[in-house]
Length: 106
Image (cartoon, rainbow, N blue to C red; front, top):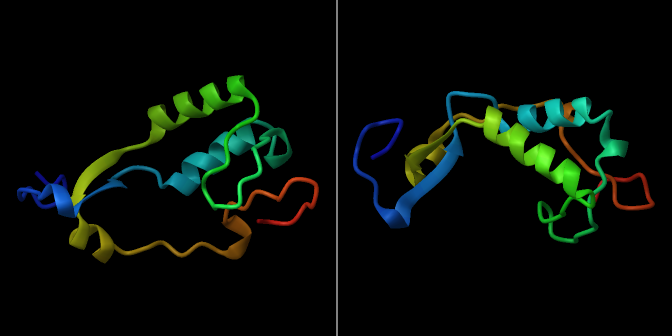
């Protein structure tokens, strides 16, 4: 059942999405600020965006706990999820991790 419409969902057309709670961006930014900034959040270098891993297992566990405490996820129809309005953020508020050793986003 869709958490948004209450209609039955098809397994082939179901999305899990942040819903009625903070956006991923907000959860991540709060975590980064609590960790003393981006310099304190070391990640592995991965060329595929979104696949980097924490190099510090303790920090990874803190992120996992933080995300579980703040994320509100829901099952939505793929069509309904893609129609949901997207919040535009100024470039200065987007999360970009610098490529290791460059200080530039990757």
